[in-house]
Figure 1: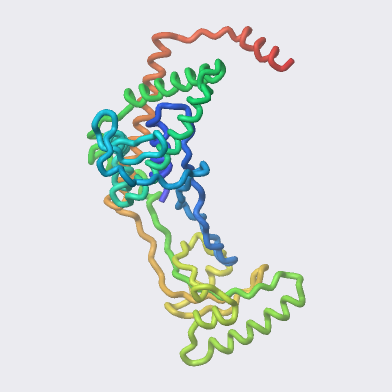
Figure 2 (figure 1 turned 90 degrees about the vertical axis):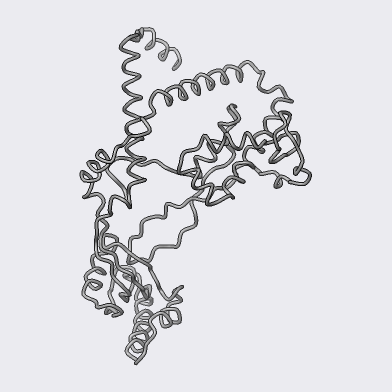
Length: 348
């Protein structure tokens, strides 16, 4: 569900990012997100791509850190050591600080999936191994690297400060404010009618006479089997077309179905099977398993998402206002002629 106001949330990416920030170093987080494998969409239905992501370590991850001997291990400050690789430790205090710095959604995700916290610890340890190596080589003491480090430090300080001055009050939004935004976005909260479908597909590209003839023979056999008493659509689909899961497409929104197919589907009763539909890619036979009527999502359903969006937009507005006020008090002066000359010289 998308509102007109933008939503940017990714729990797993946020965890990987926090693991890198905790080091206070310009060493990139070693955990990245990669799209999860998707089941190919059937030719008759335009499926939306899946949004789920799997987190995987980006670096050639070291062997999983051993926990042997950590039961009584203590960090230099006396705190329990949670994990260790080489000379790199992660203490209980660091983990508590890490979790405390996360948002409510991320903390809830960790509570449901402890594996995510384990992944964050592994990322911290991997980063620290890289840190040990670069320090041993005095890589960070090179003049050009030192300059980059200072720029990164300045950017990080500015960003952290701007976050501190653009955080909305804890009580924002109020129930009244939330209700007003919900009412204004009701049209965007409409969930279209959905159909639970199963499909048999016989490939027969237009213009290929041999494929067309072969498809027609298969189609005739399927139609004969479907007319038999007690015909099992799923079994026939798997036997005749090799369709996995009996050709089950799951729930498909009305807007995602091609018009030629939708016309047939909308005229079917529950558990009924359509006549063969010829499209440019081949023949399609659909079974309507069930239907869900369109409805508008309620405020309790979208409350958490809407609160996050409103707070995010209020934060962005506060940040813009703060920067505008600072610039108003100290107007920037730019020598445009010198700036232009600088770029002209760089092109020579």
